Image (cartoon, rainbow, N blue to C red):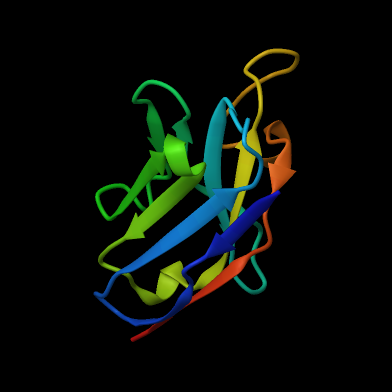
Length: 126
């Protein structure tokens, strides 16, 4: 089970940090990621991190502003969001992919993830 938190209201140019904690002592996914969906828009990929190693993936729209990180000991992935603007307003969802194998894998594809947390709302005021 994935539990997202940390959303809220921020001013343009400000920062927020989202967290996604996974329950279970033996949680060991292949990757964890963040997606978002703004009102009236399709869901979009934000960022993904592999659970081992240092590989990260970002949407072009957030590169240089957002950073994804993880704490394996806490089974938690973070999304550090800086330089927020109104375009970042959305419901943010975390997701996990449990294994690299068995089917296709593309960090940007929602259907390539196995589990999803509930959303956390981020609202940026200009």
